[in-house]
Length: 165
Image (cartoon, rainbow, N blue to C red; front, top):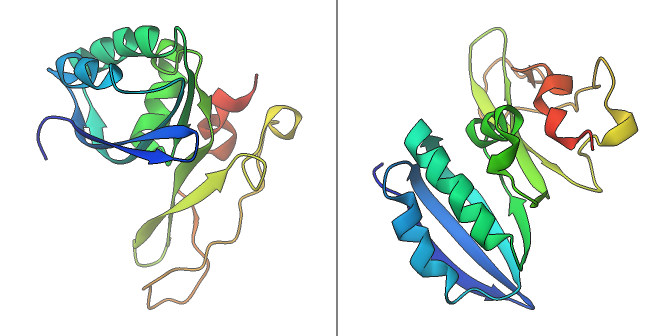
């Protein structure tokens, strides 16, 4: 998938930006024009993002400085690649709140994998719940012939590090 694409939809008092593709070169140009039509409450949906490179991350940080200056910004459906960036580069998040993320889960026997959604206020560990270890949720596979619960493919305490504050 190539350059980033964005589509805006109105959801009650929020503008939801659906992102698709790669956060790479040209991100600032593509998203900068979009900001003009976005209101004070902005949901950014990352479900369609495949990856991010260093040039794109730098452009994204600039975008978030502008977007977050006078808006409520919330990230939703962040795939594991975006969670990794948020954990490594806090400026990527700016002042946005993270509402939901996908954690990678898989079968240790056959190698099948799938993402599991964690949502703030529902099942996402926050603050004091984050210690040296986070108890994983039981995730039953969608199409694994082993018929065993999937386990996290990451250390969940490290994965949710962004949610300590």
